Length: 205
Image (cartoon, rainbow, N blue to C red):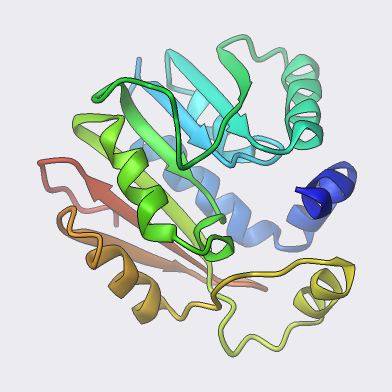
């Protein structure tokens, strides 16, 4: 967590550099969140996708292991006047919720940082209600010789895996949780937005 705690104060600036992709991610997240939904956002950083979901959700729980990231997200909530988001320090591998709790579970741009991404996906799926959606947008950094990625690595950023879209989809399919739908979002650092629906099928495009 040291890198993310140090980086929390400028994380939103980094998002601005890749703003076209973040705008697409937020748009899809808001669109796929049902009105009145109960939402969990895992490894939420400063809460960009939490705020997108909160536009339609009844409640959003914004979680992260980095206390500084959560503090930034709370500051933004106060500034925006958003009153349907709660905040909690949570481990994505041990969510502490009963089975079938949430309508939407989000994990944005975190699975490539984990040594056991499949374990995290299965834990998030566990707390998802039948018919609920697991929203998993993740940056595609394989073969991406971008100066911004080189800068992150110099600052201490260390991903466990650099995925291509096909590799990312394969990893999710190997979790054995059902059909995986993906959409590639183009931008400075592209993102593969993946969706798994628990016990149901629906296209995200």
